[in-house]
Amino acid sequence: MKPIPPFPHSVTRPAVVKLGSLTLRSRYTLAPLAGYTNLAFRLAVRSVGAPGLATTDLVNARALLVRSRRTLELIQTCPEDRPVAVQIYGNVAEEMRDAAQWLESYGVQAIDINMGCPVHKVTRGGGGSAMLCDRGSTVSLVRTIVEAVKIPVTVKMRLGWDASQLTAPKFAREFEQVGVAGITIHGRTREQGFGGTVDLDGIRAVVEAVERIPVLGNGDVRCLADAERMLRQTGCAGIAIGRGALLNPWFFGQLQRWEATGDPGPPATQHERLDFMDRHFRMLVQYLSEPFACITFRKVANWYCRVLKPGREIQQQLMLIDSLAHFSSLVEQIREVIADRGEDEFPVVDSGIRIPSGPIEHW
Ligand SMILES: Cc1cc2nc3c(=O)[nH]c(=O)nc-3n(C[C@H](O)[C@H](O)[C@H](O)COP(=O)(O)O)c2cc1C
Image 1 (tube, rainbow, N blue to C red):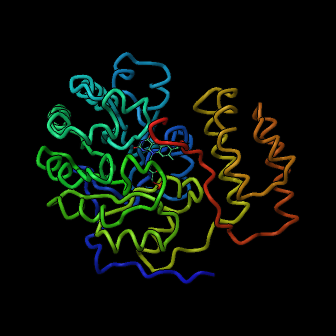
Image 2: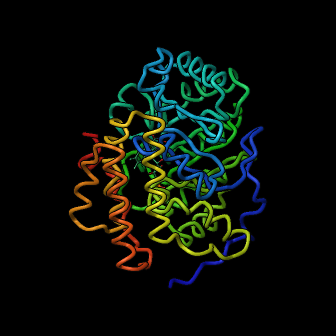
């Protein structure tokens, strides 16, 4: 077993993270992962360890204003899904403002503005990470939103457009001045996409640029050692975790125990992982239709299989799942495979999440 790194209390007090009027129960939050962090997944994660906050997939402000069915599905929430932030993108201030006001009346606890998405579909309209290229209009847009709602408004951004324009610290300072309640900073530039390594010094520069608001560090935190490094080297108030939560939904609870007691507790067993997959699928059925739940689940079947290793045949069937009954019978088969095999050490594997590849100009 790897040694457990000590929690760096010395550099991270106070532990309470406040986004304006919203006090988080934990400094570890679930970062948005479009296509994955839907209501079903958020509820399943909350059932095994509470993140301080969970954020929806990014949604287009204009689509929200015309109540596009797909967009309303993306912002689906319920009383057990608290606190939740909805992440919006766009670059028309009035649309972003109206979307934020509508979301406030819809009952969400916070609005997050996307300034990190590197994908062409989002940046070509001036949204996502393209907002990091025009300080004047971006800060003015953010101010418009902050002034229009009472709930906290946060920003999730990257370090800048590319290595020659590391604009995040300047933005962060100005966002704080116009009333933004917190910032999540993914330690990569837009040009880096998801490649290379996270620049902890870049995150630190953002932490140092603001006076009071919390900055959540983000990127590549998958185990306690990563979390320890992020907290210690950047001085961030908390950590937003994306792919690490898909790989290990228990991570939030383990991080909290580690922080409180120095011991993260035991890793989840294979049976617990199987139960988690079962719960996730049933939540998908509950909140989407059964056929749509099956289609959605196929996308994530392979990351469950990376850990559960049910054998090729079951894996193939899981990836073609077509009903709840079919799913339930596969779960029972996997249960037998695990019982016969016995518990493994938790394997360290890649989350298997598909990220855009090839030259970033083509994303
Ligand atoms: C498949 C995928 C979808 C993502 N969707 C969003 C999104 O909707 N909004 C956003 O701000 N970031 C999004 N991100 C970025 C993540 O929130 C996060 O910043 C990034 O993955 C680095 O953190 P991690 O290593 O903990 O995953 C996405 C990342 C991936 C891989």
